[in-house]
Length: 273
Image (tube, rainbow, N blue to C red; front, top):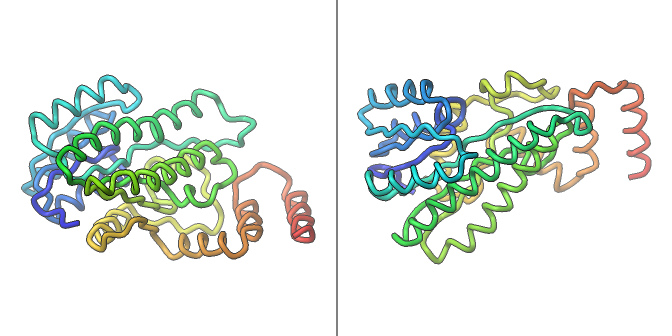
């Protein structure tokens, strides 16, 4: 996809990966950016930064869990600013907790924003893209959409769902000349993950690298964009020796269990395999 002169909408644009993607799109010649996020002040700050690059910006402070408001706002934006050529669903939240201790409100929020918010936004935009017979949709999943991790059960579930949703839409929307792409970052150094306990041995990537990889992937028309050598190694390991990946994840996860017991279970698992 050539993004020059196009109009793009980015959700989760006030911080982290969404902000980096919006800036990278502006640097690479996008004509107009519609930025969606809950935080009105931070969204305005990002919009002001992008305007300095000579790109038209429309800030849309929206909570993606408020589906009716989102539908009305996007319909009005399409009417006022014209067709959207590129949708990037980046909004998301992550809560870390052992499953048996996960607070239900956190689980509900992850599902509402990561999954239902993305679904609703895609439904609104895809229908209009289908009418114009043109468009590209990027759904930001995660390496955890390929390999689930202990203490991140709900987050992993939403990211697996996003990947499945993306794969299904790819075939359904192809007759309408709409490309559907999955972006799968590994651990990325953002405000959101600073509140989490990181997994051992994982080297975080930067938001800038994720954004640059997206632009490259769009130019090369890739259907999945996996970022970082660790991600490629993990996915390859999952195909060749999934039991080994399970072992490594259990050892790396910030679980409060007694380590000797964990290692004994791992050895027993290895014997059974």
